Length: 520
Image (cartoon, rainbow, N blue to C red; front, side):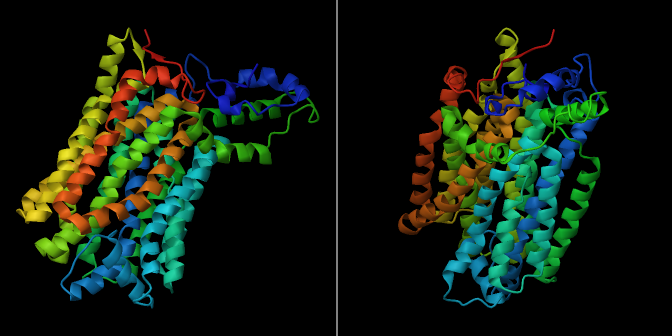
């Protein structure tokens, strides 16, 4: 009999074997350690609903803090210089931002490689970090991994504020990107503590927070940098992150079922009358560590469904980076807004995020429940996808409108409406996919999300470069029209998964979860 901690759809644990004598001595104790089906205070699914939503609040604040804290870092120096030149831009705009930071820290004006690296290194760090974060959380638990990552993030922010050279700042940018745990662990933790029909709203709230932070970050730095030094602004962000993470450290409890059960079993074994020689020694070998680290790649290449989702999310999320690069240039070169007004214009992205999250909050779970009831009470992960299909279709005209507004210099309010449209469709196109992965992969949702995020970050680091060249050759209008039409290539992914995903998932051990049946 498998230990309770591993007794679910967990094929990746197949290689973890215990010695026969250890297993025979401890099997009864491990069985006793399983959760009480009538209700167990240590079972995250049985926690009070108010405490579960408090956990969601902590995760949302952590996500918000990450993007408020990280985005002003490259923006602050640039805004100081550009204010003198009556220019403005976004905190993630590659050329103007990185160039000003490079010069402020003594970089050579001819050294363009370091300017680009200053921006893209964040994405590469964010791609590398989850490879450890997601896997280690399935080995050691969510709590120690997320707390350790938070400490590293704050420390990297402090080092960035004190960076004496451009090279050191680049290093801290990579470190902060690698220490972002919330992208992987946030949805996975929601999967730990909520049943499927309650997950959609919680995941929507967690995904809204970083997108709101990415809008407030530029607005805050755009207004504050005219009076404050860029290093001071980063220290303000350090304080915000430290307060948020301190609260999380105090109140956050372990949510990962196998870790909780292993700890309970260890306590029972320690209190058992057996001698110390008979008691098993619980430790993680190098083999189990390697299996955990390699698990995201194993899940990605072992599941055609996860590969399709990764490709789809990578293409869709590239719109986020393309808008971050082109929006400040359009505002600067075409609409000539002041630094403060330009920062405030990013609230159009926040408005689009808010609308889409309200749609997901209102309909994601209710659509799931409706489709489940129509399916004889059997819930499937595919029931998350109708909103994603709608978002994938509507983002195409929104992106085209965005480009033609810039091409013909239409009214600034029409341009901001297109920004709201693109951001709204963007979130609706991929937020339900996160809930889908959590539902489909069960205990190994963190590894599956890691695979999706790494693919997304790699695409985010390189796809905007191709779009930028397309715009330079063909102009904003036709450039973004072609980009919008190219996006149509991935629209069939959520449509196909909605109709065929159930049968396709069963072809892989890593997405072959049991359907969730409504409780009588």
